[in-house]
Length: 177
Image 1: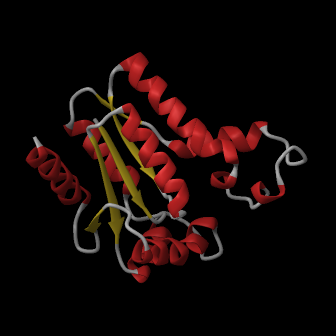
Image 2: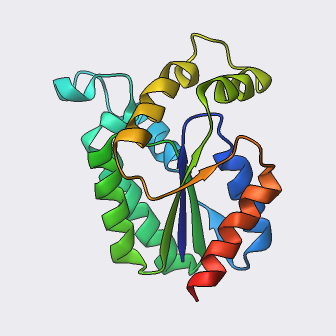
């Protein structure tokens, strides 16, 4: 099984992912952000194509490909359920990754965690982010994308605890069996 958690920075994806791993046997977190950091560190800027020089590692052509390849290899090697927290708002990147993950495991779920802009900014403040940080600057872009495109099943986290959101996801997964 693969559970993909999407949403703006600060929405609670990693917290929910950690809670899911505690409640789902034989599971682990796979964070594609780490793949982005790796690629950004090893690909020299002068080697990048012009369209890759945005400062967003998701724009590196290899990023979405490597995310899927590593997920496949982790599933093969360790036979674990993957819980994948990621902020992805570019619909074409999302489609590529979700389709790649479906080829790895038919038992796949995608949840897009949402909340109003002011609530997300409050959460970002509480975790120490400053208003001009990358996370803050991406919030409106993410929310607009989540309104304009289909990013799967949406869960409003505005008035829910991490445990409540986790339980919603577990209940949804169990109802599919």
